[in-house]
Each structure stands twice: as C-alpha cells, then as structure tokens.
Image 1 (cartoon, rainbow, N blue to C red):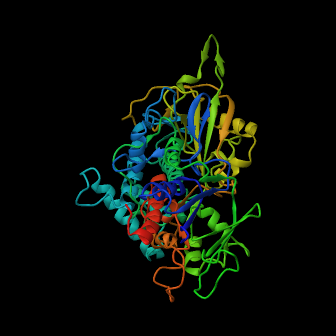
Image 2: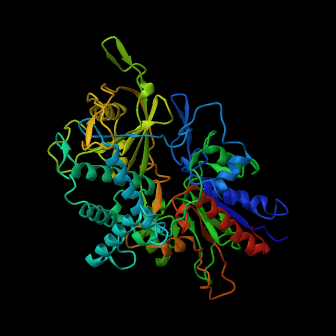
Image 3: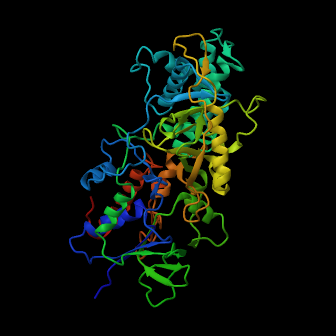
Length: 557
C-alpha cells in the first residue's frame, strides 16, 4: 500500500497554523496526508501573543487588523464573534483622539503648527506609497504634491536614483527642507523660550518619523527602500483591535486539528534535503527525501516541510557554518534573505500609580493622563533634559491604551527597542516617569490656535509615577530574533517573491525522479504586498498549502 505523503510544518504561528488548517480541511478525506506541526516553543501563536496587564487584555505582539475591507483576519474575527468583550482591551476605542503634542521642557505646541507638519508628513508618505497624484490631489494637497516631487528629484540628482537606492528617510528629509523653503521668512524664528518655530517643526517631523519606524520595523528610515513602498498594500476601512485577543484567531485555526497534530517543544535543529536527483538518504525510509533532525536528538523523514520561521531566524542561520539547512540554501535564496530588512519593535506597558501626586488639597488621579505626543530637542542640542534616558528619546508617544485607562503604552523600534529588553523594571519606571513628568510639568496658559505664539505651558503640572511594567522581548527571543520584515535599501519586492520560492527551485529540475517541493516557505516575509502583517502570514500559509494540494490533487482554494 502506497505511503501517504508526510508533511511537517515548522512553526505554530499564523502562517503555519493557516497552512495546517487548509491542508486538513480542504481534503475530502482527513487521511490523505500525514500532517504534523512542530513548534519549538511552549505555546502556539508565534508573534501573536495575547496577555493581560492591569486587568486589561493587551497584545505583546501583533495588535491591529489593518483595514477591515477584505481582510481574512477580520472575517474570521467576525465569524467567531471575537470583536466584542465584556473585559476592557487594548485600543478598544481605536486610536485616541486629540493628542497633546508637547515639546521637551513642558511646552504644549500650537495645534496649527502640529497640524501643518503632520499634514506634510502624511502627504509625503502618501506620495511614497503611490496614493498622492497630481490629478487626484485636492486643492490643499497640490502644494504638498509639488513638494514631494521636488524632494524625490533632489534625492535622485544626489545619487539615489537607481532602483532600490533611494530611501524613505532621505526622501522625507528632502521633503521637510522643501517645505521650509516654501515658507521661508514666515516667522521661523518666532518662538516661546528656547523653542523657535523651525526647531518645533523639526521636532514634530522627527516624532512622526519615529512613529513610522514602529510601523515598518526599520530602526533607521534611511534603510527603508523608497521604490518598494508603493508596492505595499493596505486593506480599506478602519483599523481595529480584537476584543477577545488576537490569540482567538490562532485558537480558531488550531481548533479543527486533531489532538497531537501540533507538537510543542519540538525545535528543529537541521533540515537535511536533496537538491540533486542522484543523491539519496541512507535510511530505512529512503522514499521520503527530507530528514528532520530535532534538538532532542530525534529524527523524522518527510516528503515536504513548510518552513515558517521568521526572517530573523533565517538571517541568523545563513550566517552560521553549520546552519538549519543541509546542504545550505542556494545562493539565490540566501542573497534575498541577506538583502531584506528585519527589525525590532517592542511594546512597553506601564501601570500608573493609583494616586500618584498630591497638590495641596487636590489629588490628581491617573484617569486624565493625556494622549501625549513627545517632541524632543534635536540630538546636538545642549538644552536637552539631562535625566531623560537616551532610549526614551525616539519614542513618539505615551498614551492610555483606551480612554481613561490607568495602563499606558509606549512603542519602541531599532536600537532603543533592543536596549529596552535588558533594562530592569526599576530603570524603565524611573526613565519613563522622568520623561513624562518633564513633558507634563509646566503651568498652562490658554492661547488660540491661530495665535502667533508657537507653544505654551501645559495643564498637567504633576509628577508621574508607575507601579509596574510589562514589555515584549522580540529581539532576544531565539525563536524570532526580531519583529517583522521590511524592504531594505538594496533589496526589492523581487526578494520577497524569492523568499516564497520552494526548493528544489521550480523549473530547475533536470530529472523527473527528483523529489519536488521538498522545502516550502511561508510567513509574512514571503508576501510581496502584505509583508509585516498577520494577514500577509495568513495568505502565505494558504498559498503553500494550496501548492501541495495542487501538486497531489489538482485542487486548492
């Protein structure tokens, strides 16, 4: 009796469990394949990890459904009724409205300046993403379109014109310079105390750059490729979080799989495969071309393995003399892995002290902490607050996770995110308390938004205290070694397509006896237009499952 094809999926995250779900549910009989999911960690979910903090449901990893129109994640969340909960959850009321943008030293910035710089940044990013066109721009946006065109031309003339050479960072900076040129002489030296309008515009712009770093995981936007940005796709509609937690999606995908199909604590040490037709494994199961070696010393012979480990893990593996793949991956694959970017983004949750400051007869409680956007002094400024730690200076905001929550959230990217992982809770609480207190300490005076004054004191006027913290540690986790992928300068969308190619390479089979589709690749870093997202990982899992279904049965959805 012919052996059933044996398929092993490495990784029980979104991509791996989606592939398993598809392979198991899209076959007319549940025993057409021998199917197994092996997970090196002690839980399912991968970079999805729902937790609790301060009595609220929070996400340590993936947080948002990025657009509900056409999103498979939103569709599943609706079907399993995961969008409603009696328990409070992170960002349950979406993005908080009306942020207070405050400059270092405690000066609230005139809303008209914040709005003008924010609009500039949004239009520049819209242009980079192919959303802003001259013929479709509104009358207010035409000037911004011209600024964006000028910025891109200047970058090109400065040597950044080849495909994959121009960075988002250099484009944005040229855009800011062009914007300033268009306003030259308009009160750029008008200011409040040590802040001039020009310095404030710089600080607000950098604040938005730091937010963009967390969106993309590029620790430095000068490493983020300009040409690839227009290929990235977002679903239309609002962005929302999942009331019952992102893990509810993972649990749904896993729920149809029989007990024992998912094996936790089974870390793969090496994948031994056959790139050449004449080679055969010396074993008692030679008809199966792939030999999996596990860290516990056990082995397994399989026909196909779907690899869903992170790009960070793949980068680490190709840098080793004896890595995960034996023989090593071919150069076309390793070169794509090397060129693509994979960054670190971490989240920090802080619990406010219940009654953390007393002022005379009045006690200020934590339920009016603002959505604080922080505009820091430039790096070379001698006017910086000496006690604000360096790792806080590229954090863009600190805000309640929903209106009036006592839990605050701060995002970190790049080297600051890495540094956060090694700090003690006390260091983090002291550093964030010092930072937020310095921004919220000045007496308030009311000015109108159309006033010529560029900033004024703010209305908090208190010392901030925290009682506990919770942080993610994606960089130091050996199962991930980072957060999500981006197209780096020198790379392109073609590299994402290359990531998705199975081995042996399709169209490169010299012998019909060669075992096809030995190693398949899934995960967010294998999707050209939806990389860095959970739905990108979902689509990749469906893609690889369908590749095998088509191979054996000519079916697939």
